[in-house]
Image (cartoon, rainbow, N blue to C red; front, side, top):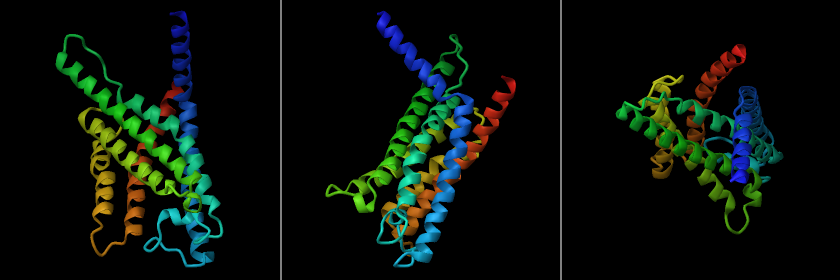
Length: 242
């Protein structure tokens, strides 16, 4: 019994360190400053120096990780793997923010709502972690290292599917209860990322599949950056009060 308590205590201590305000603040800034500039640099290099003239209309994001399209495929591989690791504290911290619901033992309706919120936030965390696991996978198994099992394609589905479904669950929480995030962000999370994923699957003309993939990525940025902004505001307040 004491061993279980010791193990649980270590897990709790690690979780608290993982979502410490300073850790999450650094994670947000590093993730944004690594991925966005890295992606832009990768596109510029592929467009100017790639053998085929890279464009977001004709080329998939994953093409940035192939020597067939860019002389610097390592850029996408590196930023994908680094960003995925750095984002782990962000998703755990977001889940904690979403479940901050006061408990009232005499109010069964509120308690049931709190349980629903915890379930949705937990699912948002699980699918979000699946998404960032997929992000690591597309860097590790790039187009040039996809293997005979097509691992790159599998991880591409995992990253977009995981983050879109995670956004859906977290968006529902933001709409259902009062949080630090405006409800308009929650509404976009419900319809934006899942909607862009559906568009990719049905592939309506005249859009190309590569362009629709870039649209999915844009939709992820359009909710992640505002979420990160409000998280940083909250973190700065916490750090001031320490």
